[in-house]
Length: 306
Image 1 (tube, one colour):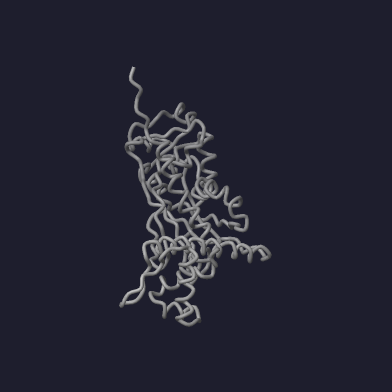
Image 2 (cartoon, rainbow, N blue to C red):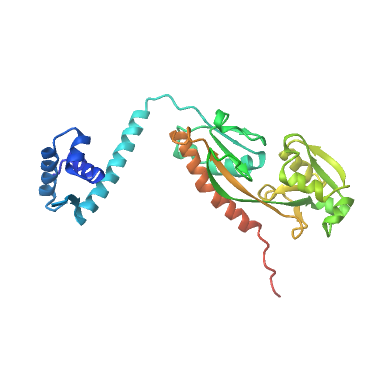
């Protein structure tokens, strides 16, 4: 039976390029490294290291065994890390910031099983349309729509958000369906105020419907959705927010559509903190899939021929 510690000498030799360098890093003599590798070769009955005038290098068999030993070493390290954390006080929540629509429609679904796989990670969600300064530790992770605007942060593009115009069927029954953007001036719209007044979809609707009646105004996206489903007027929304609303129809699809990139950002100081990394990895893996699925669900369906 081989001694697991002997594998450390093989890994060190490969990592640092020579027996001497491996011995220095491990705090032993060079003959000790050579002897332990030889013992491992004898135990496994295979040549692991090829010795030449220019030094040593792993044989093909040694390469495969070394790679496998590295994998096992990582697993052992993970087990030890988990064991050390069993009796520790749970870490502070990961502070995540996002807009109202992103938080409700994207973040909550993708993090719903995080507590199952990572029960030690809690999320503290700050819902705001203001840009949180991650460099000042206002939050650990941010999801932002559009240009990330800060090259000092670590970021990843998650996909695209689509925005469109929507109205409830009850509203359209009474006021009719606009056929072109210019018709919006004869309709009622749901206006945005406060933090959401300058969102890209709010500004675009305001420009397109110049002169329209303002039937309702709110500083909350979810409250605006309530007004939309009550039939109060026309509203510009992220498509994934409108998707779950009953009897709400998209209007002017060929004349009004906005697309913006969605980014996840974190500060270099926080990204290697295990809970932060866990949240970032989960969001960065799942939200792109969710956005693609939603885009496929919202895509126009081909007409069925008779």
